[in-house]
Image 1: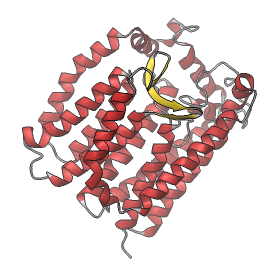
Image 2: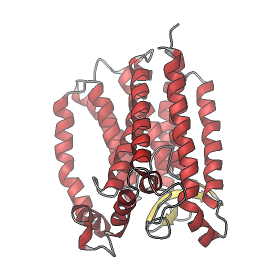
Image 3: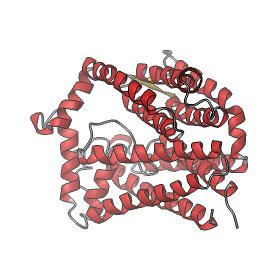
Amino acid sequence: MIRNDRINLFAVSIILVCIGVVMIYSASSIYAAERYKDSFFFLRRHVSFLVIGIFFAFLTMCVDYRKFSKVSKPLLLISLLFLIAVLIPGLGREVYGARRWFRYKFLSFQPSELAILAIIIYISDFIARRSDQLKTFWKGFMPPMFVLGFAVLLILIQPDLGTAVSLAVVVFIMLFVARVRLAYLLSLVLASIPLLAILILSAPYRRARIMVFLNPWADPKGAGFQIIQSQIALGSGGIVGRGLGHSQQKLFYLPAAHTDFIFSIIGEELGLVGTLSVVLLFLIFIHYGIKIIKNAPDKFGYFLSVGLVSMICFKAVVNIGVSCGLFPTKGLSLPFISYGGSSFIFDIISVGILLNIARTGEYP
């Protein structure tokens, strides 16, 4: 791999992070000043998350990534124990009916993000070790499905359907690339559709999200309010936007302006030029991510890269799609840009691992 590919991936990541820092302050300053009497409240926290992410990314780059395969099972076990512990009252913090976080003062930790990374590492190691058995059902297909199923169950109990679906999609992509029998994957997907329908229909807020997705104007002041305000923000930006810092929707119209819907604020303030620039940056990131995948020095690095790039790509596509009204609301942050705590930190760590793999796979 040419050294410039690694440098370019790093540069694109830095640009996206810098866009995030600027837009988080722009989107959150007025809300933070009103609620916390400090316009820098969210920016200061985000910068602290960035420092933590860079620290752990640096650690991952200092260790030969192939050593991750040796700790894949202990890491998986720890992540699953965290997923169980967060469900225990008194340990996990409940917010709006969801118990997804451990929190101490201003620090919060979402164990599902660790579980995603741990499962990607475990599946990569599993594929590398059992590449000759992947086409078999019991030895090649079912072991990763048992792990995925248990993790997804724990995440659904929180409840967090968006993260559960994301994890399942990424694992299926990894197994598809590994050439697991397509019949196995399709059979499980078809079998999962009724279960997914039950999960959606059994929860009123999930039913509301689907109805809002189909017709947000049916309840413009209720369930459809958020997506309508998001589309207004994107539409009112025009070609070049209102100007940085001049969003109207962030003035308590668009909920989660600095988290799930920060792409809409980018569209309003920087216009079509800003949103297309962000999309282009993610496409460039994916381009160099694919180069890292192709030039990975071994199977473990190859599939680890596939999993990490797929997760970042999937989250970006879903977040942008939700902001534009193309997908139902999922609650997934925009990688590198949204204010997101654990999600943001693990995005940075993922880049560190990709750079590690790229460095190992370089040739003169």
